[in-house]
Image (cartoon, rainbow, N blue to C red; front, side):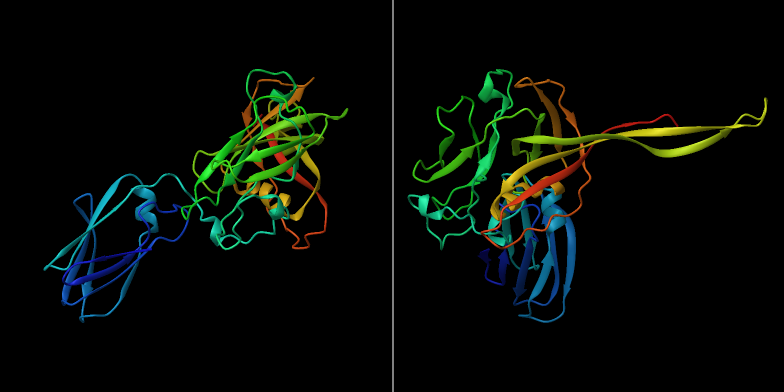
Length: 318
């Protein structure tokens, strides 16, 4: 929050780089009585009748910030003085400090970890390789969403690993180069795998990319309609839509890992591709995550398997 003052106005408002999916509030008071008007880019968008001096008025500007994210100049006028308010979104969506999450569990491995800083997001403790690790040059690196504690401003960064590590454990350094996260890189076995790429809950257009086990695939009838042949014998023909689904799996996860993967459920942009013989098929498609909720245990010692049900394709015959 920041404070902006004029000779008659006192304003408390969200930061200049707001989180778009958080509540962005403005509280103000004036020494004047009358009409107070809010302008966005010189256009009046809201007027408030101010009946008494020096009382607090709170406005929810969340929708306005989403409509005008970049760069925006607002003015608040009480007829005597005018306060200028600017903001420009970098695409941040959710403040990590406002989320409830399990302990990471490897804080002792971080060189400059400050537990009072908060807002820290790290890679999961283990993952499967991406196709780039095993010789495919067309993309598909494993990409993590991480937040560094190097300063008071929480910045989202993505970390790619485009070359095959020489060890089954790799060290990840933050953008400051001083915080190391140890990541177990699991080996492929004879099962089938896929690549999932989804937009992080913390920043717009910032995508995680991870490899999952394909646990099962299915095809089923969806909507059906009976069509009667009235010209011939009046028999009915049943028309059906077909949906193709699959269940993807990551095994033996910590409670923090489960939380890390959980925004796959709420992401509006999820993309899927099979991995065949160590390479992506190259037919990435948008999919829907049918799983609706995910409960994360706060028992740090507990290990769990995590499954998501995906709608891969819907074939309509109706």
